[in-house]
Length: 116
Image (cartoon, rainbow, N blue to C red; front, side, top):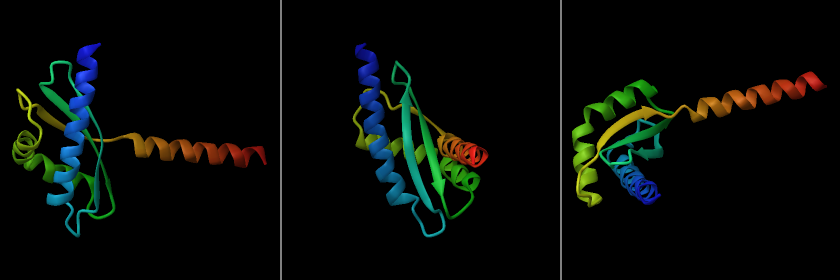
């Protein structure tokens, strides 16, 4: 129970720090809006899965590639902002939630149209 609460707290700290770093470093005119939607930590706090959404600007793939190239810098920045015994490995992935929600909305609209 304690490790779960601790991992959630550390995930929250990392999410806040990464959000600030993304805003400061990656929010150029062409990149669009990069959002850290959630962070999931392993129980041992050795790695963090960071879910990102990209709206507007460049294609998502290009932005994720840019972030992957700057992985070391981001990890170092997190280490300076969030004081932990071990600096977690960061794994960046595209958040599937926006597409999932869009698909659900589309299905709900189709259901409403079928009832009419």
